Length: 192
Image (cartoon, rainbow, N blue to C red; front, side, top):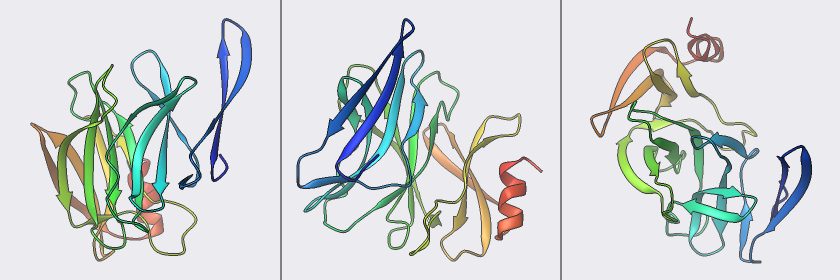
């Protein structure tokens, strides 16, 4: 991934091909790397796409181009930090999660991918969570499944506690799982 282009290496029927997707000059891809998402038989690249005047949005791209996206945040210089994607509530549909403005709004937002719909659909949100600090070249936490369904692991807004969040019944249920720290975060992601 380069700022204005996304290169996808596709393999179909034993044939490999590269596809390069270029954004308009007013947009860039802004993240540490694309994440591959299984949409139930097909794959897509989940990326953060930022617009010069409208801020960031979460988007899914395939070899055919833009598949679906959440709306732009709505203001320049506003970013989001992905948490992950998967069937977060056990209903067979794919949800995508990110922290909206991890340095300002600190809000977990969950969206649903609906096949054939170019707009991701808002499912739930929860304020008071974050996963990135200014200056970091990485995003903390992510998705884990310790045998009882997927959980989103983040920090609380003050970086004092590790938080585990679940999507259940269209709402985000959050609980503290211990004090925040690098060792504790790795243990939580490893279900220890």
